[in-house]
Every structure is written in C-alpha cells, then in structure tokens.
Amino acid sequence: MKVKVIPVLEDNYMYLVIEERTREAVAVDVAVPKRLLEIVGREGVSLTTVLTTHHHWDHARGNAELVRLLPGLVVLGADERICALTRRLAHGEELRFGAIHVRCLLTPGHTLGHMSYFLWEEECPDPPAVFSGDALSMAGCGSRLEGTAQQMYQSLVETLGTLPPETKVFCGHEHTLGNLEFAQKVEPYNDHVKAKLSWAKRDEDDVPTVPATLGEELLYNPFLRVGEEPVREFTGKVAPADVLDVLCRERASFERAAEPLQPQPRALLALQWGLLSTPRQK
View 1 (cartoon, helix red, strand yellow):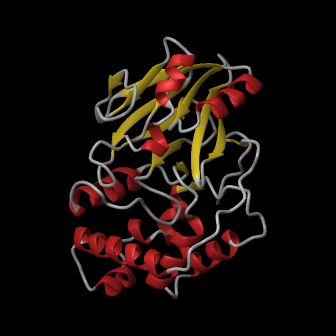
View 2: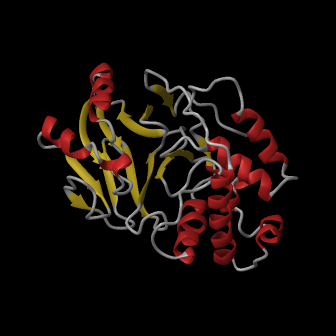
C-alpha cells in the first residue's frame, strides 16, 4: 500500500491510496479532480473508488466532475449530503481493494455524517493508516459543528483513539503548527508538545506534517488527552465530554486571537509517503 499526499487549495489534503500489486487506486476527499487525475496518470494506476469523509465543499466538491470524467467511478461516504454519492456507508462496514482492507468508522462531531477510514493489509509489516478528515488532525481536531460533545468524545477517544498506536494518521488539513501552539497553552510543561512544536517550525514550509502515528498524537494532542490531569486543570472540568467541550471553545477563541497567518507555499507536486518506506517510531 502506497499513499500519495496531495496538497490542494490553501491547506487541504487529498490522498491517493495505491494497491501496489493490482495497481488499483482509491482517492480520499477529492477537492481538485484534475490535480488528482494528473497523479493517477503519472502513477499509471486505475482509479476505481472515492472515499469521502464528509460533505463540506473542500472535501467533496470534486466528486461530480470526477464522476463525469470517469464514468463508473464509485463514490462512498456516510452522509447523503456528499456530492455525487453512489452508496451510503454504515459504521463498521468493511471494504476490500485487492489486499487492502478498509473499515469504515463513523466519527460524528465536526459533522454528524463524518466517516473516517481505517486501512490495513493482512500479513504485512507496514503499519495501518487512518484517513480522519476533519475528525482528528495533527495535534488537534476539527471544529464541532454538529452533534454533541459526548458524540465527539466517543469519536475521538473511544473510536479513533483506540486504534493501534502505530497507525499512521492522515488528516484533512495542514493545521499542525496552530494546533501545537494551542496544545502548548493547554499543557505548557508537556515535553512532547515542545518537541513536536520545534519540529513543526522547521524550515520546510512546503513539506506536509502528515502523517503522525496515533501513538505520537496520544502524547501531545489535548483532544485525545481529556483524561489527563493537566488538561482537566486547564478546562476546570472532570467529565471527559465536558473537558472536550471547553477545549473546543478555547481552541476557537485562541484561533480568533491569533494573528492572521499568510498562506504557506504549497508543494507543486504531490508528495509521496509510502507506508513501506516510512520508518516506524519507537
């Protein structure tokens, strides 16, 4: 399994997942279809399926044009609001693309119909991957726009947070630096936050910060650490859903207070992150 990370728009990511034996490919969150097709052509693969995490335009707006350009393409997701949806998926449903297994994980919070996708190959030494859209991002999560704090807690901590720690997390946006700055406000004495923040500030503005492992995220992502005492102290709450609710509000206020950031230069070419070639974190 090979994953191509494709930066598009101001800070979005599309992904192309390639089954290397059959050369079948699956796309995740198509925002710019012609850019995706450039990569498909360069890789010499057959694109058969689109997995859409949620209905927002910057994750799904390319579906209609892609279906027009590739008749017979299958578009899957959990929300009827997804553009050009072929079939609606259910939580826990499993799909298969050659040797690649996909488990569909309903992760409401950002939207009620948000689906994350957990991918792995049997009898393969490479780590699994989860495509988390706006449910879980590097050192943060998407804004809670629909549903309750309890639902979001279950999505983040009980669903995504219990995946194998070696799982590579591929999220929908490049928001890592701002998320880590907020994480430092929440846990100013967390050495893992300090180290990751230093790494994120490196002089490589056009290089994605994805993926990270779930095990890493559990060390510095406050939205996965709602049971930790420093995070509880910051929010003044104890119940995990209440802690998460305060974190979401504080993150929104922190973002509004921050100086407007200039868009970072985007890579002109898709950057390849092959799971086979990515060294494991110990």
